Length: 117
Image (cartoon, rainbow, N blue to C red; front, side):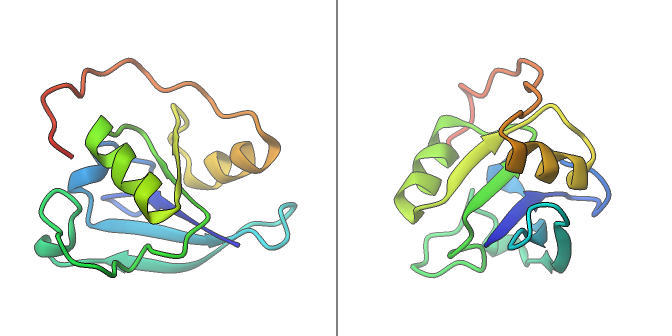
C-alpha cells in the first residue's frame, strides 16, 4: 500500500492540498517500517486546483496525508477512492506512523471556505 503526503518543501507535511504539486510517496506494506519510495514534483497544471484530467499521478494511493484541505479537494479524493487524512503533525514519517496506528494528530483550525479545491 502507498500513501502520499503533501510536502511543498519535501521536508514537512504542508497544507493547501489542492494547490500542492509536491508529494512524498511512502510504501506502508510493512507498517512497522514505512519507507519513502518516491517524490513527485509536478508541473503547475497537475495541481488539483487546476487539474481536470482523468488520470493523476497520485491515483491508486490508499490515502493522502496533508496539513489542510478544502471541501472541494476532499470530494475529489473521495471520487478517486483515496482516503484524505488531515493532520497537525509536521514530520511526514511521523504522520505516516500515526496514520498506520490510527492516532492522527488533530490539525490546527483553518477556514477553507474560500477554497474551490
